[in-house]
Length: 235
Image (cartoon, rainbow, N blue to C red; front, side, top):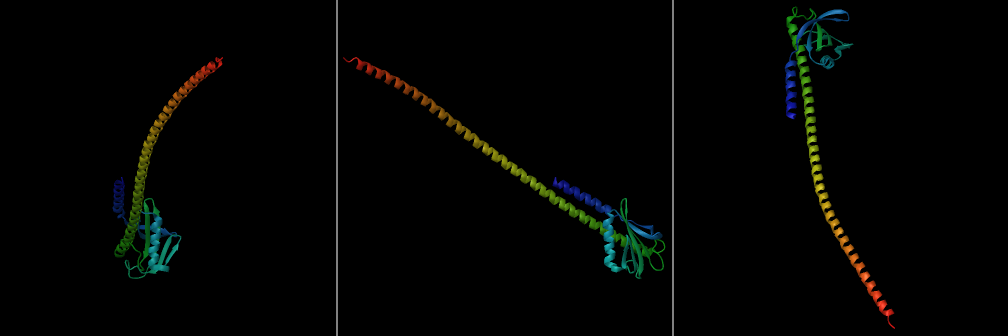
């Protein structure tokens, strides 16, 4: 039973692992504060709150106070992302929930052009890798979390299994005690029956002794009357 559950968990995790490698990056337009902006986004099949928290943390850890968060719209002015461009750039980013998971979108002002698949292909590829690396990190963290949860579930299952075995052992001991008690009671009943028979035999003997005693009394009365009668006949 435990082996089957563990195999099922591992198969599910392996399936999720291969599925999680899919993190497509697409060109996407988004309206930010009623202004349409061109950018790119990566899609992930993960909870948007977890992704948004991790994305904000990653940008905040690297760029500190330059990261501004206005109701979910992230902006960074004059930051250098070496993986994308050596010069300072302006970034606008947003994390959104989708029916299948989450998208991380950003628009990058390179200074002389906006990031575009056709207009800035080199920077596009670099930005694409940055988003894909982030997505892979999120998938790895998610799988590690699922593995930890599966391990905890397995430990709980093993503990429960041991508890069931221990309960079965306790029940078996109780049954053995009950059988021993039954034998003890049967022996006591047998001894009690023998004792009862002994008492019945004593009663029978006593009744016979009483009958004999009554016979002795009658005989003694007869003898006494005979003596009295002889006494009365003396002249």
